[in-house]
Image 1 (cartoon, helix red, strand yellow):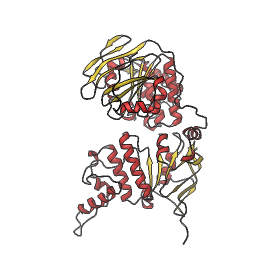
Image 2 (cartoon, one colour; image 1 turned 120 degrees about the vertical axis):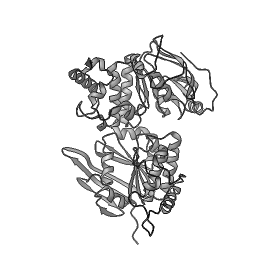
Image 3 (cartoon, one colour; image 1 turned 90 degrees about the vertical axis):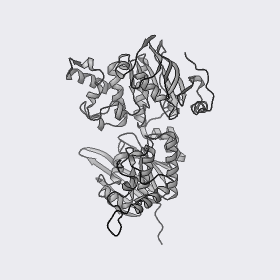
Image 4 (spheres, rainbow, N blue to C red; image 1 turned 30 degrees about the vertical axis):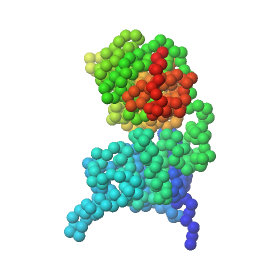
Length: 507
């Protein structure tokens, strides 16, 4: 009996050329049974193109795919499904109005001998697949009634129902809470024990080290190398991705602190947060950290005017201001880069130029008529300043990478010349290279005596960037910690509600 090949999937010298653009150039990738293999690289590295070739969406210009020891040609997504290839994407691809079982049996519901739909069989088989990943939900529930995490787990269960031997996870934790991410990792371990091969794509490097066995790095469409994760450090992985040494990803040049720009006293929104007190100086990065449900994002939205607060005082430059709607927040010089940039920060179907000039209407229009020439000059200035990678100012924003979309949102507020930048999860879904560029924007803002409030669910990022951190737990302010007192264990203890509320430090 011949021995089964160690790599049951191999992609050899995969090349893909679009017109004059070589998206992939002799890329190699392999996968073993029961392995989680990370596919890593900056936006534009070629990860998505390689996966689309595996899933039958693209045909390679050159190269081979070898599956279970024989060369195959994946002609379409349907063909990929027949081979046992499946994918779980960040934007979950399920029919929201249908039940879980109907999604599992899409287009091929079982029938009785009387040609009626056999719902009992559909429910039973769906439950069996869900039980295999320890997900306890009613197969009759509609997808739209499930949480985002449950929908993602259902998508995984569907892959198992379709007998997928290989599952691609593309940014699977982007929309999940910390607790939901832990549940996903448990399911990944279950899949490993079932000998499923997993291709894992994520910009969150800590996840790579947490769940992956090996990592393959791509850069500019070329294969850089494959390493066992146990042999890697974060610095080494970043160096492979960006081809430069990285001493400290979060190290930024800090400006000279100026006067107090923003003061918040007793800010309260009933049932969400209460008695929030802090101040932020010019040239300072003020961090906010808390677990899901802590109220950090809600505080930011209230300061901007997107949500109303019930009581409290907000002062800017020592003067009490009224902020009850976003237009008032903008008029007082507050900018908000929201957690969900695609739904709340950008008009994805509009151009880069239109998005950049969206807020600074008084600078580019008169009597409601836009001066296209002025708008072009402003857009081109910020595209150059922030190194936004786009073919032109007329490019549709939805076609840009995540990092470049984020820079367009920042440009929108720079064009308005705001003084206070509230950045909620500024690097979520952003690759390492774009992340470093966004941190350089932080430096530029600080040099201009702006104030930055950064909110992140990733504690190393907050600790690396902030001068002070306000820690939240279930709507309560647990304390403010100065940079010289930063301690990861202490901050997590406060965020978990374990450490008693300390006297707030307001300087």
